[in-house]
Length: 278
Image 1: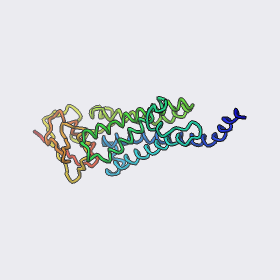
Image 2: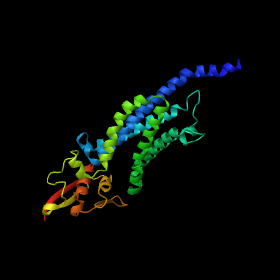
Image 3: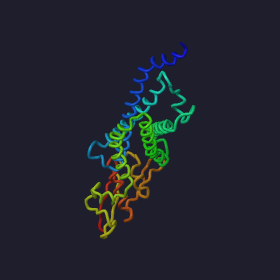
Image 4: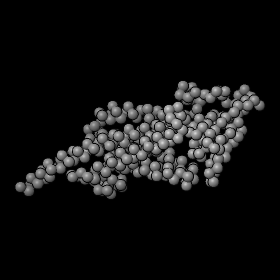
């Protein structure tokens, strides 16, 4: 009789656990898709590619909504493991990597989710943190997405769902990776690849040729001090401690490409470039 107790418990919890695991799978897939969309949309905002699709303030708000939804579904995925009737996870195990002998794939998911939550919290405190430190922390989103994707693939292999992730997951992942790589390519390369149109009056190369010069001006009414221009051209733009923006009004020819990238990336379109003849 005693030997039948584990079997009776397993039968009692089977239906419940099956539903919980199904919820965990759905929330994981939603988090995966939203995470990729958040990264891709964030890159498109930073590069200015998304300006044609939405209002300027809407760009930033959409990115934040996608990030919030990705974190919400990721948290739901983690929470589902605490309400299993059989082999339930303790809160310690879903908060601390390798707690109580946790698996490597679980640790990756925990680290990825915690990194994303940290980035989201500090995004709300951006104006209270020195910009360069905030930017380095925000750029950890690339690492968070990477280790979470690895977690997803290892989990799919372990649970026998690799075919689903192979088809849907790879379809979502490839454009995300392509956009992320393009984020770090020089503007001249993007023009040659047809991913970017050169600004009227300026050819991508050779920069500064033909005896022309470039003037930079910033509309202080439009500028919201997001600091994206500094990320694109730190030698030309700098946010100082009192939230003022300093910039080089007449950049040297070798900085023309970065000046154009900064103007293109500004979500408020506050940077204006003017060509003048020397």
